[in-house]
Structures are given as C-alpha cells and as structure tokens.
Amino acid sequence: MPDTYAVEPRTTLGKRVARLRRRGVLPANIFGRGLESVAVQIEERSVRELLQAHGLNTLISLQIAGEGSPRPVVVRDVGRHPVTRVPLHLDFYQVDLQRTITGSVPVHVTGESPAVRDLGGLLLVGADSVQIEALPADMPNFVEVSMEGLADLDDEITVRDLDLPDTITILSDPDQMLARITRPRGLSAEEEAAEAAAAEAEAAEGAEPEAGDAEEAGS
Image (tube, rainbow, N blue to C red):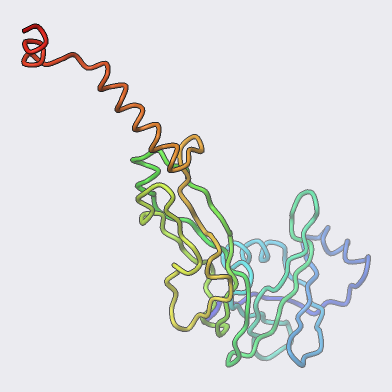
C-alpha cells in the first residue's frame, strides 16, 4: 500500500495563500483525467517528508478531510522559490491504477569504477533522469546505475544498458549517455598510445648494455 498523507480542502486562493505559507501550510491542487481540479492544503512538514521519500511521479495516497477514502496520486510538479528553492506549491495528479502514466525518474549512481580506481580515469555523469512509462504502482522512486562495470578508459553506460523490470517501458533515447570514463588530462586514445610508445623508446635508449653486449662491443 502506498504511503498516505493528510490534506484539507482549501478555500484560501490567490495572493492570500501567503498567509497559509506563514503558518507552515502549502497550497496544492489535485487534477486528473476527466476530473475537476480540487484545491487543497498540506502541512509543509508533510511536504518535506513526502518529497524526500518519494519525489515526483511515485504513487502515494492523499486523504482529503471529509472524504471517505484516499485518492491515489503522484506529485506531478513542485513550484519552488527561485532563490531559496523551498517548495511553495504542489500539483498532484490523480491516477487510474489500471492506466499507465509517464514521468521522469532520477538516476542514482552507485558503486566504484575500476577504471577510476586503477587507471586514473575521470567519471563523467550524463543525464540525471530518464523518462519511463509504467502503471502507477510500478513507477520506481529512482533508477540505479552501477559504476562497477566501467573497467576501461572510454567505457560508458547508456540508457540502452539499463536493466529494468518488464513492467517498465523506457521512453528516453537509448543512446543517451548516463556515465562515461574519460581519459586523464583529456588525452585521446591515439595521444595516449603515442606517449606510451615515446616513453618506451626513451627507456630503451637510456638502458645500460648488458654484460654480453658490452663484451661484444669491445671485442
């Protein structure tokens, strides 16, 4: 069962919602397919807990005071202060549990790349979210991408490499880069090979001749 959060019907509208915010209450709206929008309000503390635990597009329940049963919803949008980024307003989308929805899900990078640890490679992180489609109950909070398979320089992980359940359809471009190992100091493969060859040649020139070689040279 999804987590349930309590909200109340909201009669304070327009510029007067600033009064709600001063009381630690945020304005919100519930809308959905074929449904009339409902104005509600929710405790700011509950909003912080909700966003930390679920983020956007993950199924939760809203219990509106006075209604008999909770409504299945996802957070579709969060209005934030342009400077402080604190939440100011929420939009909830009421879902049909039997109908798929689409949404953006964050990508979480996990593990350590052997190419970074052993070869001095630099980890470049690409897209921080992917677009997916699934039934509301199957929408994940996030998608994990492990770095442990990145063993060589220039290795990368793309959306195509994601291993997700069959209940989830990925809508993002399969070639979209999620993580890549770049070469130290920005060297290309050709430049790195040239440096390695030059280093070997220099080492060979500076090497002292072995005993057998010295005897032959002096004979």
